[in-house]
Length: 124
Image (cartoon, rainbow, N blue to C red; front, side, top):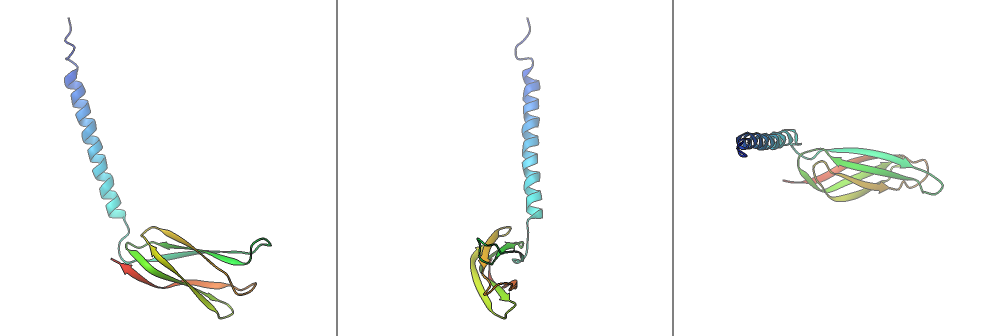
């Protein structure tokens, strides 16, 4: 007659190794995320797309992404149009890695714009 508990030490050993491997994997992943996380002050990248169709008035869709390591509040985004006019829009906040979307409407047809972030308040 065989002992029904004879395989138990092997099963316990494999379960212990599996649990240790899982814990080690979680710790490693946490360290990698921590090391590769953005640091430093807020930095911005801006992507624009001008849209002109019969159904949609001329507009400029803007995406502002915070690529820095801190939250930026009261982010002022300015559109300077080729006719010399300017208009500002303010974003309440943008977290690190977050993208906010804005729309600017040029004052006339065939007018282009330069879009920049003119100011923000760092939220350390």
